[in-house]
Length: 344
Image (cartoon, rainbow, N blue to C red; front, side, top):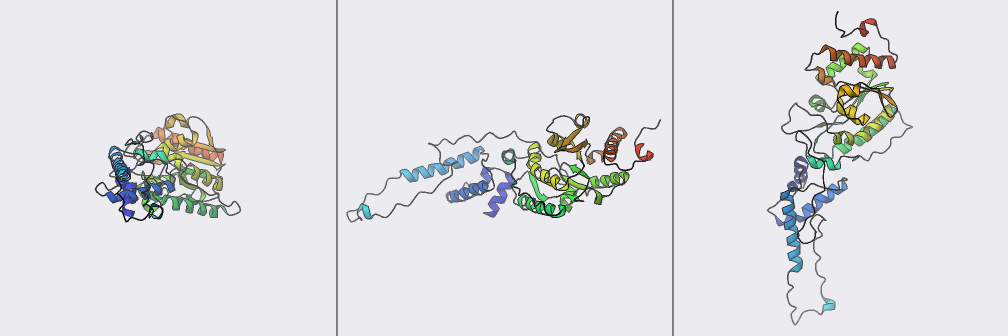
């Protein structure tokens, strides 16, 4: 059963949970569907092979019901003393349908890019039943409680379009400033630490230029698990809007605990999710924003600068940092103000 469930999570199709060659898999299918239901899933995507298999289960049940009963012998026990007939197996609603007609699978969001299974999108809204943290505890204790809830949920393998490792926020639980990325990458997943790869090196340099350290800020991601894709090595992809919305309840509770004075949204996915606005990064960046009453600065993702050496974009990013420094009343020297300005 464990191997069956693991394969189903990997491939994301009802077909993967059924052994076509064996008629004894009906009960396994029922158990599988019941387990999905316990995890909060109400629909599964039925591809053509899965529909054929479910039809076959239904046909077998119908034949068993309609099979003629043997005529009672002259010495048979009188009807009122007859042994109760063995009840038929209880099938799920997916298999117990009228005649042979299986209902069409529920319309699901269009297929997501780069190999994300489309059926995942049907169950991505508020799957995490968070329990509010105790406000009488310290901020660090509340974060520990929240993180334990998220770790327990993520380890259940509920979303196969995300990798299993959960990369939680880290830093000062009383920080005034939060850096919020889109999702962890290869290096972050491997170390279970936010911003620890090449992007983390960029962040360390930025913090140093701002006169800050990691111990003074809080680092986190909108999506706490690395988005997966076929044949994945060190590459990664942006989270889908559905994956981003999944973790919004976690982010809301996280920010209630930290209560920062400013949030820096790194990347267009983070910006679009928090502002509920569509547009390019430049368009979203050009207007002031706030999220849950906290000033929100939208800017380039750190990975953007790993492969580009465009001075003008570096200046735009640095201007965003200068605005944050002014908001937090951090000291700013003339040298800091002049970084990445084109020389005349």
